[in-house]
Length: 424
Image (cartoon, rainbow, N blue to C red; front, side, top):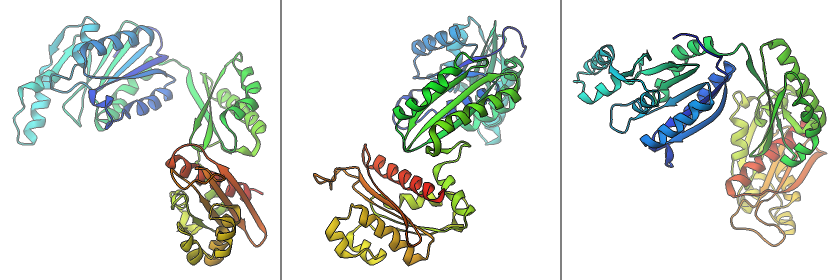
């Protein structure tokens, strides 16, 4: 593996396999590769999934090679007729294929260790493009290939993650690091709740627009995901100290503009932030939830060590359960309906009283698709957070989407209300 040509700055990943175009298999390898490439300062500019078609793979590969410094393929290195990657790549690079006797011997030995004879079809995996460096695969029969092609690099990796990941880490990263630019990518992320994507954009666009012409420039991506808005800041630099300080200044400017709607600047999820607040204040919490069916309690207890502050969670789905398990007065349910702020507060105070928790959370709503009324459409959720005898926050939300989205959004809103109460 030599290090000629220009530095590697951009990459593309092509995942090969018709099964990845169906509904049962996902391409997860590209996520792993994107992380490893980012650590080298190599930007993953595109990724694609292609079926076992010689023509389609050839077209995609040629396009990627024409616009990026590095092309990585995953999959299609097996022994069967539909494993086309090495053949297509060799043809596209005008490299003859030759059988490598050492690979044949390793594959035969692997079969022999299991008491089996190597099928002749496995010889396909020993066909190597002229000049390629073979990457040994201790976890499978398909070796990888590293090809220097002028000022470009092509890497062929097997599809199974247990084979691809150690190969990338153990063999490829070192060679790619030698070819990578001295610049690296530095990132920071803010997580925001309580504002829509457009409201976040309105607040921060005047700030981040000034970064585009700065040296070094900061790329800003606004991403709407369930329950929150994420702001991803990326900077390319060869000076780590300056880059991290520049990103820290940018992060602080956005946090000032968005205030306490920013709930995380260090990668923590909402439930982790809430858990840390409860732990820091030596407080306990209990939850009574209806429409979310235990999802809120599940998120709270997904955090390791949450037994220090989560006392109980009750999925009080029916009105009878709300009364018998949590103590919500039947008269309150009759007067206001189950989906109402008074009932949400009664759930919060009832579970707090019955468990002795310092803080209680109550959630009640209509997740759909049925159960709506003219005044309370699907997505209506009432949430209350209570602390002590007096302090309480109650709100009614109208969440969009289907049942699963409404349930998740309700838990995010409940956690955010708890976060804000604890931060007072």
